[in-house]
Length: 261
Image 1 (cartoon, rainbow, N blue to C red):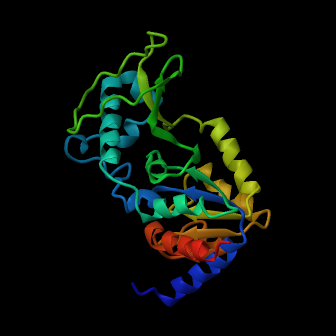
Image 2 (image 1 turned 30 degrees about the vertical axis):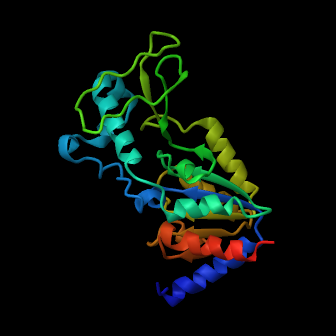
Image 3 (image 1 turned 180 degrees about the vertical axis):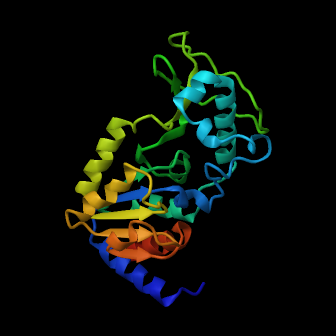
């Protein structure tokens, strides 16, 4: 496939930065999984769910008001994610971690498990995970419940087997809930201590995750942005590659693998 000259130049500049970077932090957002076909928060509002406001299904108040409704909505999303596969961008990041002498840390805003299915270890899921359910009272982890292949408007949540009093809720961070402290602290640390930070498919709008690349930039750590569109990070990035994750990351990692020694 032919590559636009400006994209090629940006890719070459990114490769030069990546070749000397031993500690690499990769921050990923919704654009990372878009090419896998993962529907966005609102795109999943089809069929049965098209008349529901997703923001009204993603709060502690919504769970307290109607657990069966919220549970059914999140289990439908589990099914949608399980129906797609990691894309070439996910696979490239997994290969990057196998390059000798590289320490690659992944921090994601995504609640899917596509990084893991591609073979990566994720340091932090800042917004939680669709595959990390827990009790809403004792908070003990629980297996992901069965997700039907067809949407249901109501599905009663499983009862916690540990405390027998709570119900099993999705392990995502809802509106009005804080980010998990340990994960966010780990993300701060790896952004401050990296040799290179790569921001993939995130707009820079959602706080406080949007502050992370700036922690690196403030310390003079180079930041590569990979996104087909300009974002709030663009003017601060050392290099911006106007391409998708699946388009740019394989070329970047292929170049690293070819020269690794």
